[in-house]
Image (cartoon, rainbow, N blue to C red; front, side):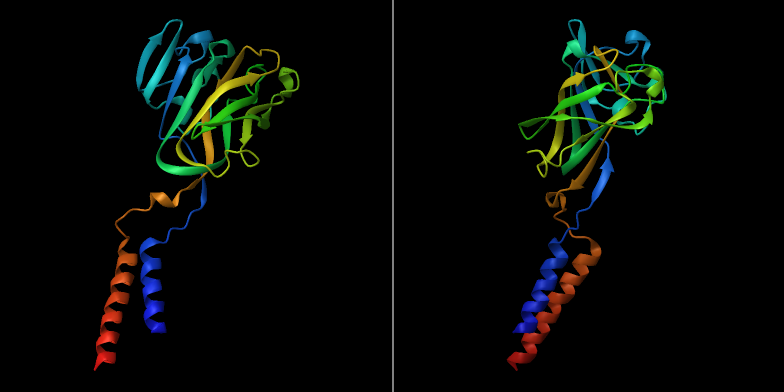
Length: 231
């Protein structure tokens, strides 16, 4: 009987086990609301989805572009410029479920431009729960820009000590950007990455071949043992 239980446990483990590990990922797609078109202020970015007018600003939906192309910007020609007064928001969308521990907002640098690295905090929303999180600067030093203490090009948003840590979702919303520095009316982003762990809910209902083979072997062994013990 103990052997039967052991084999059954092995079969179940083979079928349902899933090892989750953290990885650095970008959104599969994103929507952005109340943003300026490429070319605004001489800065350029791309977006391949639907772009619709919202008065003086635009909404980007159902697409991808500069913010998730896997490339950190090298200048204003491949970095999206935002204006704080527009109250822009960004929905980062994923094809699978993840929990998130931190995210990185890249601009470009090193540079003497006073805009990269100006984000001091942002609202992050996951599953309807919002937390304002102050940023930590990292990356190339922008000391030459004398940007009022904003000495790095990029910002790290750490979720670990917030109510958002461990929440599982396929969507992360960024809004309410707060800035400081010489040009606090602007901020710029060229790429967004997230430190994420895949949820066990992503496990396919169809087992991998090795797991299925192990399960079938275990079941056949159980059947054979039962026949032998019943003789």
